[in-house]
Image 1 (cartoon, rainbow, N blue to C red):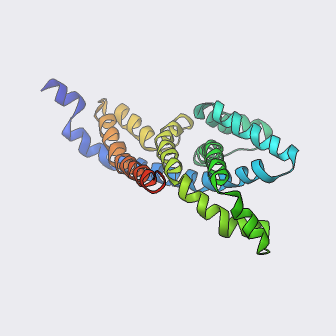
Image 2: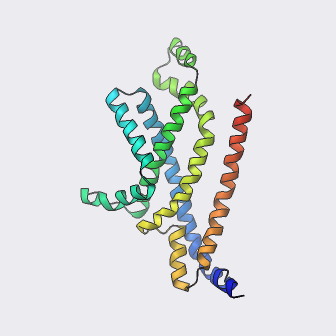
Image 3: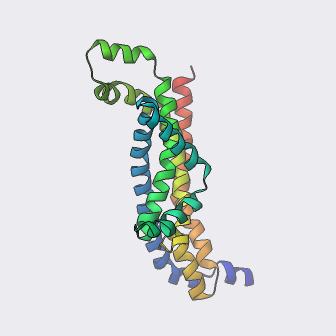
Length: 224
């Protein structure tokens, strides 16, 4: 009974539930924001990496390598605590969204690059023969084919970004983990942390299964 009272206290769960629910909402909004902007930025960085003049390509390579090498927590701390020294002050939500988007963009850029390079070169030549401009070729011909290839790994990275939203508590954003730790201190009981873990499982487990299904369908479609 003692372990139940400590880690699975029903009374504490009932009181902490509304607090954690607000944190869950913030976590979902943060995750979706990071995925949206990180995906767009990743495609742009990829196109610069492949087709821009050499100096810009080198900058894109440096961006991708650095953001993949630096831990997300370090990026988050730099964005939130270092930018004010340059006169740029961001809220905890914006700082977390910027940091997560930047890191996701670096990984997305490499995935999309692999997808574009997997498209046969004849597709480019055919589009050129039809008189399509480069932007139109990418929009209508290349990217639709590449995205079918890169969706499974991009979905996997998106799930990882959702998990990494818990790092936003470091900059005092009221995400799920921050609300759980505050509730733990308020009620002097670790039950809110257990409840937060349940929330994460309920949120992320379907996404993990969805990603696995995508990978299976990808193997069936392209593994023949």
